[in-house]
Amino acid sequence: MDTPTTPKRIHQLPTVLANQIAAGEVIERPASVVKELLENSLDAAANEIKIDIQKAGHLLIDITDNGCGIYVDDLPMTLQQHATSKISTVTDLSNINTLGFRGEAISSIASVAKLELSSRIAGQEHGWLIKGEDLTPQPVAIMPGTRIQVRDLFANIPARRKFLRTDNTEFFHIREIIRSLALSRPDISFHLRHNGANILQCTKSDTRERVRTILGKSFLDNAFELEYERNNLRLWGWFGSPAISRSQVDQQFFYLNRRIIRDKQVNHAIRMNTQDHFYTGKHPVYVLFLEMDNTAVDINVHPAKHEVRFRNARDVHDFILSSLKQLYDNFNAMSNPNTPTTTNIPLTNTSTQQHLPPQHNNQPTQTTLQAVDNIKHIYSQAKPTHTNLINQQQPSKRYATANNQFLLIEERYLIVQINSETLLADIVLCNQIIAYSGLKQELETSAIRRRPLLVPLTVNVTTEQTELCATKADAFKRLGLTLEQISNNSVLVREIPILLEYADISRLIKDLLTMLQSSASDTTIIRMMSKHTNDAGIGKITPETIGQIIESAQNADANYVAESKNKVWKKIDGATLKSLLKMR
Ligand code: ADP
Ligand code: MG
Image (tube, rainbow, N blue to C red):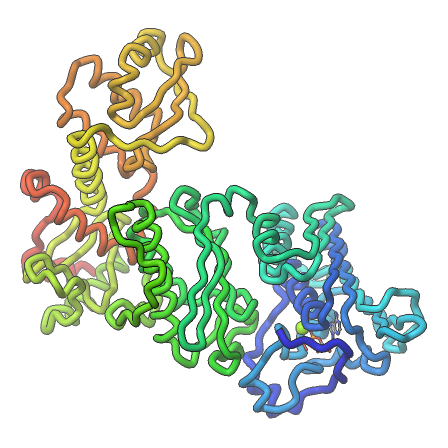
């Protein structure tokens, strides 16, 4: 990033320019103050930043950097709205290479807290301080750089305080901001203290070392390192394997030109690749850096600057999609030595037109009444043309929902069109069919595949059952469970079936004990096991994974589908649909 080493002068932006900037409230919680101040330190080319927090930032946020500093004459100006040293003209807006540019943060913070600002430029004998209402700079002893102390945040705004969460939560957000900035700038040392205790210490290093400090060695051990380049786009970083996937999207760091962003196109391109490799409801961990020319992106879109607008969104989407696809192909090729490796094959331009995300946000879960409204909308749009078919290659297995809107009712039922029939699909059963088919195949080949639990689980059982666990240890293993007896009435579960990741394992083991006691057949056992698929996972179904589930369920097991067709796919006739539409 192009950063100044001596300060530029601060000026107030002309109204015309100020009005063109995506304005908005930037300070909503202590973490937003920390983010704005840290971004200022980064823009000032600091390479050492100390952050001292008291009481989750309510009492004090104290940030000291060794950056370029601020001219004493400009100190009062920082408190004015739209006062910035980073842009001057409208054309600057199209080539922003600093994190800040709106000149709003310091003035906004000063309006909701007590602020002290001290700064010293290299070569000056001492620094200068402004505080409170008095804007006359006073001499102060300080090392070259800038220190900002923010006290009693929102103290005079009870309405704002009401929205703040517990200290733990607010501090968690502060820490997350620092972690995400620290990941993007390994060349800067960050030192975070909270209530006097050292919380995070990152010394200057390379990116790999910084990733290790922030995400841990286990992440690096379980991540694929990648680097792809095409035209003027470069994507590099680390992508966590499914083994370290998470049930939340809390460890996904995506940077555009070292600025953390959240972007629908980017997320979509990543999801298109991961949905085949990660279980429903499981999310990858990644640290990815996308680099491109600054003029190819507009960051003046969102007040908090984490949304951007790519000038050529489709290229970016395609590039990420094909890069990650190649990553997986290479990985699969390496895990299967019989397949030729594609490591050196250049990226091809994958057309992803049909995969681009819908313009509006889909809500995966809806109440039935809302759903009826949507049915009306969807049905009226879907019926005449059927143009929104996904999976064009297999006409015999077509399914469609209008405008790619998937409509999920009560987190379980889905209205779909398969060939020309309108059907109500039971997603819970679909998931069970998929699991059933997978378990059956694995058992027929050898044994059900297992994965170790990070923290082994203790299950309480009767003394009699403990003995059965011991005598049937091999049978359990064949069914994907590794058990160890730890007392007369408890067993330790070390491994579970990969396909039953969300199962309630205690219940599963108890059901299995009952079946093994009565010498049930393999088919009966795996049918029971597949019913555990949805113990916890069903709520995690997203609009993006629904299509995949329906598709897999249809392919999963012809016999099972035929047997339970009535339950899984319920045909909706015209009259039922009409009465649904009239329900309100
Ligand atoms: P912006 O960052 O959008 O320009 P701010 O309100 O955050 O607006 O800051 C106003 C100006 O104050 C900046 O443009 C910069 O010149 C100066 N400034 C703020 N913080 C620092 C810092 N830590 N070091 C040097 N200059 C700073
Ligand atoms: Mg700023």
